[in-house]
Length: 465
Image 1 (tube, rainbow, N blue to C red):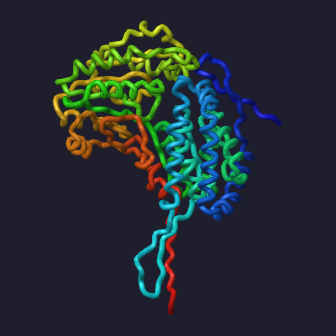
Image 2 (cartoon, helix red, strand yellow):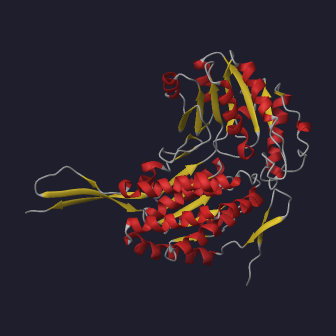
Image 3 (cartoon, helix red, strand yellow):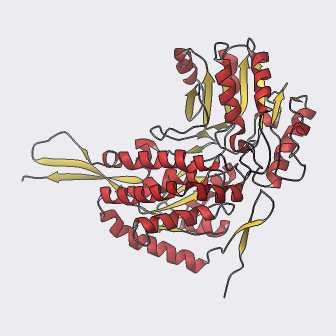
């Protein structure tokens, strides 16, 4: 019996841009069995060969970046002038780096010689890795786990958001063409209850999840049914601090981009900015002037620099935060009428800059995930640090200054997973990607990322009796 088709509604124009079926219980059971069976042979495949297959798949996806990007724009609304960058830059950079360091990162740890013994620690793959990827950066968020998990000798089952189902299909096509053995990479769509059952199934050995705090809690509850680890990248309310010695022009340019790129729909988007009073007025004036240069409109138009949010309900949530903050005394410095495409009841939302804000307002404390930022004046480093730490989220934070020593000193006091100086909203794959507080747990990327995808096995060998 055929199952009912699920549909993905495009934020571009409300049309159906994809259709798919949810996996049945039988489909899921078969996929898990295939993954377990395939992992035995894949684990025995030399690491160089595993890496070469993954590299071929990545190269194929990069070659097709324009096609994948247009498809992605239809699914989630990012301007087509920006979408190829997710694949050509971030996706390719992270995959290439993690493949390149694999041999060293996964090498045996050989202990100092001891007479009559040979001792070493071997990193063994965990088995089957379930990757749950979001819609906002589906290639970037998934590649953090998919490629290193495969290179480490695990098999992977990928479930992407129902907003971006084509992403998983494109992975599968590239892996097949690259020569990946059957069953080593699989993808499926499933409802929340079925995903929870998968997480609790003994055939799943690790879960990588990117999404909301509520989703992360659900993953943790499901994972508690067995002894497996999880990597959770959750929400953010990422702050920036502008010191009086900051290079203002470059600082403004980068922070406007950090706040509004992808319509602010990024876990590490800049959502609140603290500016030293000595430069506050100049910073705000420059920030507003640059924000007004955005063009909101159809993301398939190459002139558009700000596309719609992913759905009308998401835009309504952001509008509600703005309205609430203004009702509590905040001032919006952008008139939405300056952006004719802004329409109530649609995903198209003008960017907004709020001043006279404080931490009584949700827009300064709760994740917004949209094109709005609040800017507050502060008197000194201590006040800025206190304000940055006044949040249940802690994914990234940035400081803007010419004083590197001060940046390091202040960074030691800021609760965050990544501390930036004079940049924001970027992942260096050589550094651990991690969050604290409600922004998550665990680690991906860097050499440390491989530790999460393997288990240590000690070899204690007496070579003479």
